[in-house]
Length: 476
Image (cartoon, rainbow, N blue to C red; front, side, top):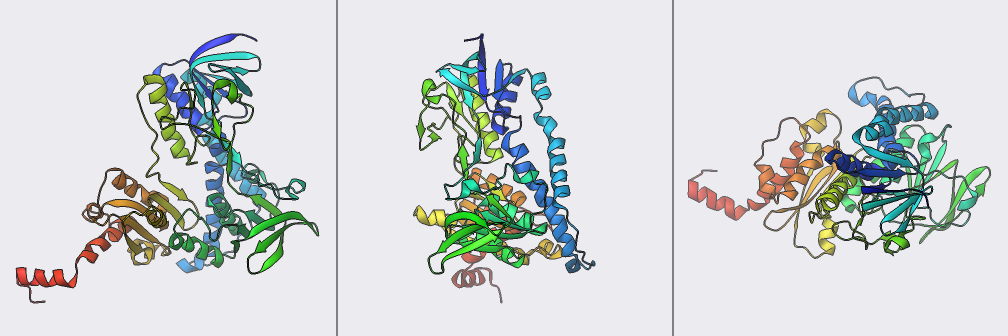
């Protein structure tokens, strides 16, 4: 064994979670080492949030040009060269990359080691023969695409989010296995960029974690844009068919049938990166290939923490940043800080966007929670009308007494609009609090007040109106 060095904190993984922990700890004055086997920035920068949103924006520009006649401007059919679009995506990554550069973290005082390593003891991690000892360790190794064990798939070239943004050819017909957030975002983006797109999934509907009335708005838009949906099916096998990729599907009523396309994108979930870390030597337990952690994000070895996607259950960069703060408070200050697990906001960046925070209607039903539902459509929001973006609605879930339990928005800029509900739910507010808050006119944010107003209108029963007339002597 080579040399050994003591640290306050050894972080394994240089994605969003690991970088936030490293920067925070070094800024506070701790001695920090970060081990990364590839490049700093992780999935979010290189294969996730940044490139996908850049691609989605290019796709929206193309869609707006085709759809310009709706706004009184002559429409154009853009000549799209997908490799050029992907070059723009890579340039966006390069613009943001300096924030996660080795130079920046070295200036902060973080020692960086590039390479793969493993635990050799409960308090030691070895990288290329160098032993790193630390008071505390953080596993922040992220996740990778989960590849289903489909017969024939190992003989077919397929895409994942890790390879899609490096494509250097046109994609005539893209088959997408998976109707979750990644599959839906990429389906619409590639369809708008000129590809024929077909989505298939075992689930009965798109975005199965969302309420059916909310996800149905996205599904309807997909159909309008020519995206073919094959849902509630089983994938039997994958094969070559006349120079294309063939997928054999089975439907309960239709039986078996083939789909074929030029490219296949696998978007069937994520798998934690935990192989080869020597977790057994560190006293870190796994359950169904996932880390066993407590509310403070500690593993079975109380000096080894986990955060970010590898910790789960929410695979979002904003959740990784939250968990990083929890780890810092526990590891450096020994504060009994717990990770938030309820009222986590998220957004799927389709057009229209779909965002949620707190309980959904289906979750309230499953958990037997008494609740009320209120809805309001974007079609009745003046700003949405002026922008020609009237699809969708806002929906809130409250207790019978009006306390907010959850909110769903499917519509323009839903990811921005949901933040108001995140704050309201976190502070235990009622729908009436939103009704009593002045919202600027004309803005899309007015929908947050208007949906809350539905509760007040519901309370104004004919009997109550009669009593008001009698009490105040109204003539109406």
